[in-house]
Length: 344
Image (cartoon, rainbow, N blue to C red):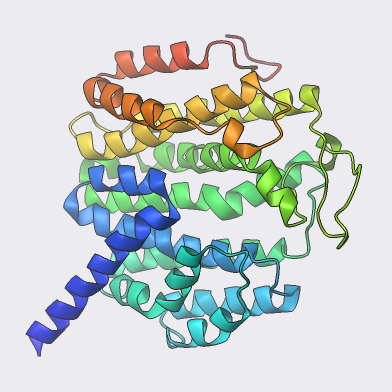
């Protein structure tokens, strides 16, 4: 019997590792940097978040369906409902707008949940907290087609990403007694790590979101100058001065993400590589957005494979040295707009 369980677990992890690069090239690159005992749980946590994100994003799902499915998903993760229920109810309603890899991920929810439920008790509590907060937060914003105020953006980014920063911190603290001694400081900074990455994605993907009639940017950034024949898709016109303000806010979060990363002990090379490589790619993307704040396609601000390779190479060489990491961050962010109370 134990051999069967071991084989099933190995096959589940094989699927998890295989699907990851199809739903996130960035995290498929950086998650393997983590120590073995963290790699599987962080990879699993990311895929759980991606399932929730898939439910949130599909434009064919009604508000009531999204609310119901997100609540069900939270209960599945907590072990209160059977994992098979989610794909049975959700998969038939997903549209072609959802990527094939994301549909496959939802269909294999029981496989991913099987890994989740084989995590340690502490890890399960951490994961369940994250998914519960994320799912309820996403449900709260289900009716939103465009955020109205900056504080709404701040709240949204917490629910979908800031809480993931908290999850990472708790997993790192569970892994290392040394890290856990700095938990309070790390827990606060980790929210900005998540929010900073999310805001970069929101800025980068503004046109992708607009194509399904949604904008996560405050309404002041847009003029509704047109709609598709279906009347669903916003035609945003980016307001450059307001865009710069959001770039400045994103930069502020990424600066705290840097503080978070260098607060991890230098001996934890794998964790630092994971954090700093991810942060480096976010900074490079933000630089491209800042150069073309009125870009009209998201591929115009995506970083190149060469830049990804360079980020990986440089990070590997400076990861153990905080002064080099901080110096590199200052160099890469030079010229980015800063909040009113800050200077370069």
